[in-house]
Image 1: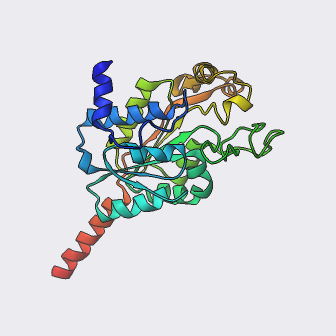
Image 2 (image 1 turned 45 degrees about the vertical axis):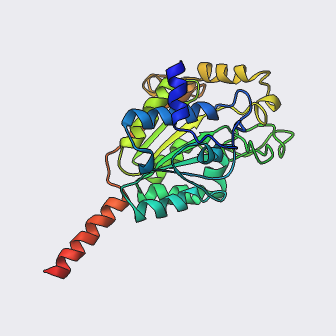
Length: 278
Protein backbone atom coordinates (compact mmCIF):
# COMPACT_ATOMS: atom_id res chain seq x y z
CA UNK A 1 0.00 0.00 0.00
CA UNK A 2 2.86 2.37 0.83
CA UNK A 3 4.36 1.81 -2.63
CA UNK A 4 1.05 2.59 -4.33
CA UNK A 5 0.63 5.75 -2.26
CA UNK A 6 4.16 6.87 -3.13
CA UNK A 7 3.52 6.19 -6.82
CA UNK A 8 0.45 8.42 -6.80
CA UNK A 9 2.29 11.18 -4.96
CA UNK A 10 5.04 11.08 -7.59
CA UNK A 11 2.46 12.24 -10.15
CA UNK A 12 0.81 14.99 -8.07
CA UNK A 13 1.66 18.65 -7.72
CA UNK A 14 2.48 19.40 -4.13
CA UNK A 15 1.11 22.91 -3.83
CA UNK A 16 -1.47 25.01 -2.03
CA UNK A 17 -4.30 23.22 -3.86
CA UNK A 18 -4.12 20.36 -1.36
CA UNK A 19 -5.98 19.03 0.59
CA UNK A 20 -8.23 18.25 -2.39
CA UNK A 21 -11.83 19.45 -2.63
CA UNK A 22 -13.45 16.04 -3.14
CA UNK A 23 -16.08 15.06 -0.57
CA UNK A 24 -15.63 11.98 1.61
CA UNK A 25 -16.60 8.93 -0.43
CA UNK A 26 -16.42 10.67 -3.80
CA UNK A 27 -15.22 8.33 -6.52
CA UNK A 28 -13.23 10.98 -8.38
CA UNK A 29 -10.15 10.25 -6.27
CA UNK A 30 -10.34 6.62 -7.37
CA UNK A 31 -10.41 7.75 -11.00
CA UNK A 32 -7.38 9.96 -10.35
CA UNK A 33 -5.47 7.02 -8.91
CA UNK A 34 -6.52 4.78 -11.79
CA UNK A 35 -5.38 7.33 -14.36
CA UNK A 36 -2.00 7.69 -12.66
CA UNK A 37 -1.47 3.93 -12.43
CA UNK A 38 -2.37 3.58 -16.11
CA UNK A 39 0.02 6.32 -17.22
CA UNK A 40 2.80 4.90 -15.07
CA UNK A 41 2.21 1.34 -16.21
CA UNK A 42 2.45 2.35 -19.87
CA UNK A 43 5.68 4.22 -19.25
CA UNK A 44 4.61 7.63 -20.54
CA UNK A 45 6.77 10.59 -19.61
CA UNK A 46 4.94 13.38 -17.80
CA UNK A 47 6.00 15.92 -20.44
CA UNK A 48 4.43 13.81 -23.19
CA UNK A 49 0.97 14.10 -21.65
CA UNK A 50 -1.52 16.94 -21.78
CA UNK A 51 -4.56 16.67 -19.51
CA UNK A 52 -7.42 18.94 -20.53
CA UNK A 53 -10.34 19.38 -18.15
CA UNK A 54 -13.56 21.35 -18.02
CA UNK A 55 -15.47 22.84 -15.11
CA UNK A 56 -16.82 20.91 -12.15
CA UNK A 57 -15.47 18.42 -9.64
CA UNK A 58 -13.77 16.36 -12.36
CA UNK A 59 -12.04 19.49 -13.65
CA UNK A 60 -9.93 19.67 -10.51
CA UNK A 61 -7.76 16.85 -11.84
CA UNK A 62 -6.07 19.37 -14.10
CA UNK A 63 -5.00 21.21 -10.95
CA UNK A 64 -3.68 18.17 -9.11
CA UNK A 65 -1.68 16.13 -11.63
CA UNK A 66 1.92 16.93 -12.56
CA UNK A 67 1.39 16.80 -16.33
CA UNK A 68 0.98 19.53 -18.90
CA UNK A 69 -2.53 20.69 -18.06
CA UNK A 70 -5.23 23.03 -19.34
CA UNK A 71 -8.23 23.93 -17.16
CA UNK A 72 -10.74 25.19 -19.69
CA UNK A 73 -14.18 26.76 -19.76
CA UNK A 74 -17.37 24.79 -19.18
CA UNK A 75 -18.13 22.35 -21.99
CA UNK A 76 -15.14 23.32 -24.13
CA UNK A 77 -12.50 20.82 -23.02
CA UNK A 78 -12.75 18.83 -26.26
CA UNK A 79 -12.30 21.92 -28.43
CA UNK A 80 -9.07 22.88 -26.65
CA UNK A 81 -7.90 19.26 -26.79
CA UNK A 82 -8.63 19.06 -30.52
CA UNK A 83 -6.43 22.09 -31.18
CA UNK A 84 -3.61 20.69 -29.05
CA UNK A 85 -3.69 17.29 -30.77
CA UNK A 86 -3.77 18.78 -34.26
CA UNK A 87 -0.89 21.14 -33.41
CA UNK A 88 1.27 18.37 -31.92
CA UNK A 89 0.03 14.84 -32.75
CA UNK A 90 2.92 13.31 -30.76
CA UNK A 91 1.36 14.40 -27.48
CA UNK A 92 -0.88 12.02 -25.55
CA UNK A 93 -3.95 14.19 -24.94
CA UNK A 94 -6.36 13.14 -22.19
CA UNK A 95 -9.69 14.89 -21.64
CA UNK A 96 -11.51 14.70 -18.30
CA UNK A 97 -15.13 15.85 -18.07
CA UNK A 98 -18.20 15.36 -15.93
CA UNK A 99 -21.54 14.19 -17.26
CA UNK A 100 -22.96 17.71 -17.33
CA UNK A 101 -19.81 19.13 -18.90
CA UNK A 102 -19.67 16.43 -21.59
CA UNK A 103 -23.33 15.84 -22.40
CA UNK A 104 -25.01 19.20 -21.88
CA UNK A 105 -23.11 22.37 -22.74
CA UNK A 106 -20.35 20.25 -24.32
CA UNK A 107 -22.58 17.66 -25.96
CA UNK A 108 -22.19 18.93 -29.50
CA UNK A 109 -18.40 19.00 -29.13
CA UNK A 110 -18.41 15.37 -27.99
CA UNK A 111 -20.50 14.31 -30.99
CA UNK A 112 -18.16 15.95 -33.47
CA UNK A 113 -14.93 14.89 -31.75
CA UNK A 114 -16.20 11.30 -31.99
CA UNK A 115 -17.35 11.83 -35.59
CA UNK A 116 -13.90 13.11 -36.57
CA UNK A 117 -12.33 10.24 -34.60
CA UNK A 118 -9.53 12.54 -33.47
CA UNK A 119 -6.88 10.90 -31.30
CA UNK A 120 -8.03 11.85 -27.81
CA UNK A 121 -8.61 9.73 -24.73
CA UNK A 122 -11.76 11.03 -23.05
CA UNK A 123 -12.83 10.12 -19.53
CA UNK A 124 -16.40 11.08 -18.67
CA UNK A 125 -16.96 10.91 -14.91
CA UNK A 126 -20.68 10.25 -14.64
CA UNK A 127 -22.22 10.90 -11.23
CA UNK A 128 -25.68 11.73 -12.65
CA UNK A 129 -25.69 15.24 -11.20
CA UNK A 130 -24.08 18.68 -11.35
CA UNK A 131 -22.01 18.11 -8.23
CA UNK A 132 -19.98 21.29 -7.84
CA UNK A 133 -22.32 23.86 -9.33
CA UNK A 134 -25.42 23.43 -7.21
CA UNK A 135 -26.84 19.92 -7.47
CA UNK A 136 -29.01 20.41 -10.56
CA UNK A 137 -30.08 17.32 -12.49
CA UNK A 138 -27.88 16.54 -15.49
CA UNK A 139 -28.51 14.95 -18.92
CA UNK A 140 -27.65 11.54 -17.39
CA UNK A 141 -29.84 11.81 -14.27
CA UNK A 142 -32.35 8.91 -14.30
CA UNK A 143 -36.04 9.69 -14.60
CA UNK A 144 -37.37 10.50 -11.13
CA UNK A 145 -34.09 11.93 -9.83
CA UNK A 146 -34.60 14.38 -6.98
CA UNK A 147 -32.27 17.36 -7.28
CA UNK A 148 -32.02 21.10 -6.65
CA UNK A 149 -33.88 21.73 -9.90
CA UNK A 150 -36.26 18.75 -9.72
CA UNK A 151 -37.50 18.55 -6.11
CA UNK A 152 -40.43 16.34 -7.20
CA UNK A 153 -38.35 14.16 -9.53
CA UNK A 154 -37.07 14.98 -13.00
CA UNK A 155 -39.24 13.97 -15.96
CA UNK A 156 -36.81 13.82 -18.88
CA UNK A 157 -35.33 10.72 -20.47
CA UNK A 158 -31.59 10.56 -19.78
CA UNK A 159 -28.71 10.17 -22.23
CA UNK A 160 -26.74 6.93 -22.46
CA UNK A 161 -23.14 8.11 -22.87
CA UNK A 162 -21.95 4.84 -24.41
CA UNK A 163 -24.77 4.82 -26.97
CA UNK A 164 -24.08 8.46 -27.83
CA UNK A 165 -20.35 7.88 -28.35
CA UNK A 166 -20.90 4.80 -30.50
CA UNK A 167 -23.58 6.43 -32.64
CA UNK A 168 -21.28 9.43 -33.19
CA UNK A 169 -18.38 7.31 -34.47
CA UNK A 170 -15.89 6.86 -31.63
CA UNK A 171 -13.47 4.02 -32.38
CA UNK A 172 -13.12 2.82 -28.77
CA UNK A 173 -15.96 2.99 -26.23
CA UNK A 174 -16.02 1.49 -22.75
CA UNK A 175 -17.77 1.83 -19.40
CA UNK A 176 -16.45 1.10 -15.93
CA UNK A 177 -17.15 2.00 -12.30
CA UNK A 178 -15.00 3.22 -9.44
CA UNK A 179 -15.98 0.09 -7.49
CA UNK A 180 -14.25 -2.10 -10.10
CA UNK A 181 -10.92 -0.28 -9.78
CA UNK A 182 -8.71 -2.99 -11.30
CA UNK A 183 -11.01 -3.26 -14.29
CA UNK A 184 -10.99 0.52 -14.59
CA UNK A 185 -7.18 0.54 -14.71
CA UNK A 186 -7.37 -1.84 -17.65
CA UNK A 187 -9.99 0.19 -19.51
CA UNK A 188 -8.07 3.45 -19.17
CA UNK A 189 -4.78 1.79 -20.14
CA UNK A 190 -6.49 0.21 -23.14
CA UNK A 191 -7.98 3.53 -24.24
CA UNK A 192 -4.65 5.34 -23.93
CA UNK A 193 -3.03 2.90 -26.35
CA UNK A 194 -5.69 2.98 -29.06
CA UNK A 195 -5.72 5.27 -32.12
CA UNK A 196 -8.65 7.58 -32.76
CA UNK A 197 -11.25 8.91 -30.35
CA UNK A 198 -11.43 6.76 -27.24
CA UNK A 199 -14.08 7.29 -24.58
CA UNK A 200 -14.41 5.66 -21.18
CA UNK A 201 -17.54 6.43 -19.19
CA UNK A 202 -16.84 6.03 -15.47
CA UNK A 203 -19.72 5.63 -13.02
CA UNK A 204 -18.76 7.45 -9.83
CA UNK A 205 -20.93 8.36 -6.82
CA UNK A 206 -21.82 11.85 -5.57
CA UNK A 207 -23.42 11.33 -2.19
CA UNK A 208 -23.43 15.01 -1.30
CA UNK A 209 -25.66 16.18 -4.15
CA UNK A 210 -27.22 12.96 -5.49
CA UNK A 211 -27.13 10.16 -2.96
CA UNK A 212 -28.65 11.91 0.04
CA UNK A 213 -31.63 13.12 -1.99
CA UNK A 214 -32.25 9.79 -3.72
CA UNK A 215 -32.67 7.27 -0.92
CA UNK A 216 -29.00 6.33 -0.43
CA UNK A 217 -28.44 6.55 3.33
CA UNK A 218 -24.65 6.40 3.05
CA UNK A 219 -22.06 6.60 0.30
CA UNK A 220 -21.33 2.91 0.93
CA UNK A 221 -24.87 2.20 -0.28
CA UNK A 222 -23.98 3.85 -3.58
CA UNK A 223 -20.95 1.61 -4.04
CA UNK A 224 -23.13 -1.38 -3.15
CA UNK A 225 -25.54 -0.27 -5.89
CA UNK A 226 -22.71 -0.58 -8.44
CA UNK A 227 -21.94 -4.06 -7.13
CA UNK A 228 -25.55 -5.23 -7.38
CA UNK A 229 -26.68 -3.44 -10.52
CA UNK A 230 -23.75 -3.61 -12.93
CA UNK A 231 -22.71 -6.67 -14.91
CA UNK A 232 -19.86 -7.37 -17.32
CA UNK A 233 -20.82 -7.01 -20.94
CA UNK A 234 -20.34 -10.65 -22.00
CA UNK A 235 -22.66 -11.83 -19.24
CA UNK A 236 -25.12 -8.99 -19.94
CA UNK A 237 -25.50 -10.10 -23.55
CA UNK A 238 -26.48 -13.58 -22.38
CA UNK A 239 -29.41 -12.25 -20.35
CA UNK A 240 -32.97 -12.09 -21.64
CA UNK A 241 -34.17 -8.63 -22.61
CA UNK A 242 -36.42 -8.29 -19.55
CA UNK A 243 -33.45 -9.16 -17.33
CA UNK A 244 -31.11 -6.75 -19.12
CA UNK A 245 -33.34 -3.85 -18.05
CA UNK A 246 -32.35 -4.50 -14.44
CA UNK A 247 -28.60 -4.04 -15.01
CA UNK A 248 -26.06 -1.57 -16.39
CA UNK A 249 -23.44 -3.30 -18.55
CA UNK A 250 -19.74 -2.50 -18.07
CA UNK A 251 -16.80 -3.38 -20.30
CA UNK A 252 -15.63 -2.61 -23.84
CA UNK A 253 -18.48 -1.92 -26.26
CA UNK A 254 -16.40 -1.04 -29.34
CA UNK A 255 -12.76 -1.52 -30.22
CA UNK A 256 -11.94 -0.54 -33.79
CA UNK A 257 -8.36 0.26 -34.75
CA UNK A 258 -9.14 3.25 -36.98
CA UNK A 259 -6.61 6.06 -37.51
CA UNK A 260 -7.34 9.40 -35.90
CA UNK A 261 -8.02 12.65 -37.73
CA UNK A 262 -4.52 13.93 -36.97
CA UNK A 263 -3.02 10.86 -38.71
CA UNK A 264 -5.25 11.19 -41.75
CA UNK A 265 -4.47 14.89 -41.94
CA UNK A 266 -0.71 14.23 -41.84
CA UNK A 267 -1.03 11.63 -44.60
CA UNK A 268 -2.94 14.09 -46.80
CA UNK A 269 -0.42 16.85 -46.12
CA UNK A 270 2.50 14.58 -47.02
CA UNK A 271 0.76 13.42 -50.17
CA UNK A 272 0.15 17.00 -51.32
CA UNK A 273 3.75 17.90 -50.49
CA UNK A 274 5.02 15.01 -52.63
CA UNK A 275 2.81 16.12 -55.53
CA UNK A 276 4.06 19.66 -55.19
CA UNK A 277 7.71 18.50 -55.26
CA UNK A 278 7.21 16.11 -58.20
